[in-house]
Length: 235
Image 1 (cartoon, rainbow, N blue to C red):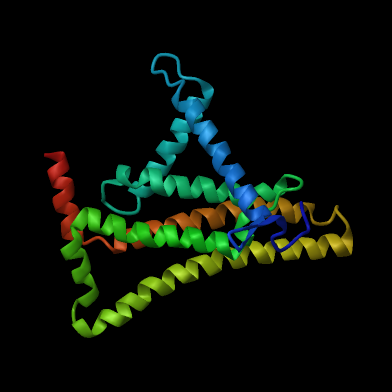
Image 2 (image 1 turned 135 degrees about the vertical axis):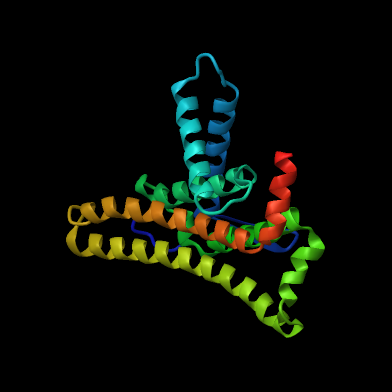
């Protein structure tokens, strides 16, 4: 496990007077995205109903597990949310665990990464809220039960997303600092049990980020609008 705490500059160059900095966070994040894209294309291009491969069966079990988890949370058309929430879980989970590989650092220890993830979650909440309930009905929730609550509801939206970014960033950065300190003080043998424990923690942080996003999406959807939507789909 690597002992560097903060992102390192990999490339630095100027374009039209702008100082462009590429850190190891960006390189690692893009490497993970290309890896997931390659795996997705590889599995999807070899799908078979008669003779599914082991990778296909494994991927199907992951999708079913994600769907079952979301179904237990609320009575909404979960298949609409499975790709998004499932991608968050897998993507963040791999980013958290990547530091177990030598010379790699988890991008989630960088505030810019967690802020970008939080921004995606923020816009997804409004996107799905409008998708299920319509723009007019969705905006009405900001002034219910009184117009005086508008600034408080807006502040609530921004503050919870900000909290998600800080929480994930703080958890991952603090853990790398703890491991770095232990390695400096006691060598590479003592931290091994804690590194094994960190695997569970890394997966848990990824799960909580996706789950909180899912809960906020549900909170932005009116119950009666969900029922009408599901009723139309079933009909």
